[in-house]
Image 1 (tube, rainbow, N blue to C red):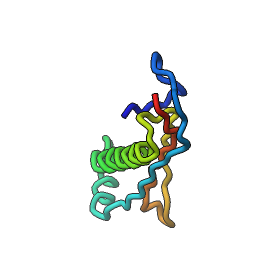
Image 2 (image 1 turned 90 degrees about the vertical axis):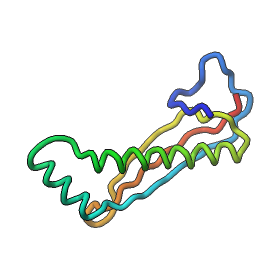
Image 3 (image 1 turned 120 degrees about the horizontal axis):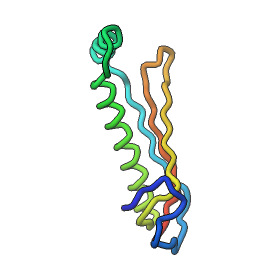
Length: 105
């Protein structure tokens, strides 16, 4: 399935619009990961643990969106928008959401 942030796919005209599709994933931050990330923040550098969690959450959200598009009969999703939000009273949860339009090309 083709997934793109653009409104169209060059050379592949849209034959049918199936509607808006979404994917949402909420992940909790692990206490040990938080501890190691805060230590890394003190000494500098990137937090590989958080980057891995973020990448997995993004892939899951996109996969959910693609599955919803396929269920509607689409073979592509155009106009995809990815959003990230920190949730919880102490920012302990991360939500990754994506939205797009399911189409047949």
